[in-house]
Image (cartoon, rainbow, N blue to C red; front, side):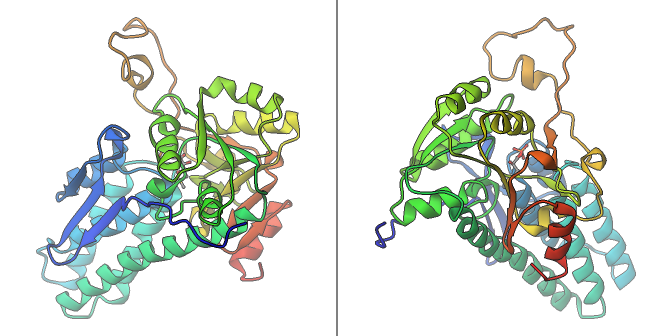
Length: 359
Ligand code: MRU
């Protein structure tokens, strides 16, 4: 393997310009055809950016929400510390209501509110500085976590392997390397070669629009397939491992991720292929006992019927069921890869150990 590292291009998906006090994101809904950066100024623009998937992917949503809350805190007029905190909590609750499944959103907002509580007695400028520093920490921490996840993930595959992924858990969904795409990008930097199969990921096509775009830009051999083709590529012997991200992992290891993920896991089990879930510990919700307690977002039927088509693909009266996520049962998961290491079954024990600093 060449030690001459090939630097993979990373798009800066979220950036806070401190000099201008501006929050800038790449609008992921326009990719891959247009790389447009937009500035989020109002609470409504921030809420919409998350709701409409301009910014998406569990860790990225959390990072964006942290900067958003700092930016909104700057505009709070209440003079008393209690008044400031109440207003901040209201804004946090509003942002948190944009999407229910990814726990990183409420986690990051909770961290910001806790920071405000701890620094509430400081002069307003210092309190705001503490909030800014916290948002930067959440962001920088994610970069470090993605790197560590990538290193651990890379130990699970070898040069020349075929890897199947679903949705997008790359740099756009996180920061820098990403989670599920992290080992692939890191391995590529080290001169390894993988053959990646990217599920297109109906109905919002994150695999087609984002994963194949990111991997292709990074020089990875990526093949786009429709979701219903995963079985044949597995049967052909072209897949040695499945790598997916996660939006919320319950204490027993059940993992919510983009709709269709659990089907991939079931197929992988049938073909004897290890199925790995990769995510930072901020995606693990130890207060959630199992997958039945994970809230699943339901989205607009038009994402199925009309969104990508010149003409509607179903009659207006046709009912649609459009859950944005499903839960993969922990029994189907060969390992949960975090920045602290690789957790194996029984997950109730290995995940608990992560938070006891024993892992
Ligand atoms: O609806 P999305 O595009 O936000 O769903 C994203 C996913 O399901 C990702 O796989 C998950 O957030 C992990 S991102 C590292």
